[in-house]
Length: 124
Image (cartoon, rainbow, N blue to C red; front, side):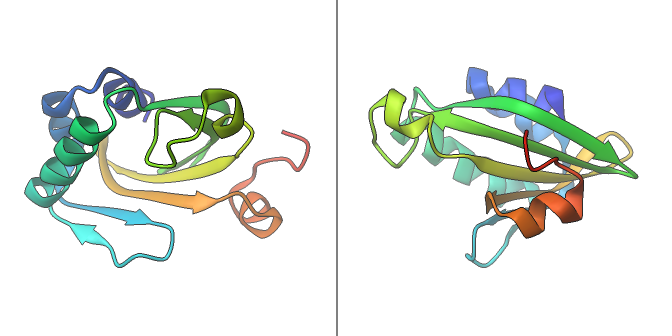
């Protein structure tokens, strides 16, 4: 999971693809899942092209039974906010890991219910 974040922050598409399962699913908020390594590679390529300064800033990471969750912020995203404003918006990423590879990457709004479900403390 840390390697996946590192690849995102460096814009390393090949590294991301190598860390995905063939049936990798990307779930962004309430959008339908995007399934498959090729489809996700293309989506990440488009995002990196449109937002080359995109960076995830993790603040708290928890892991349990193949699930890794990250609480943090971003800069350089599609929100197109000044970094100082964007860094005030917490996001939770939840990853499912199978045999060391990412099978699911979910982007969710920070919410007390989700924090409780995945084990991120309310004061994190």
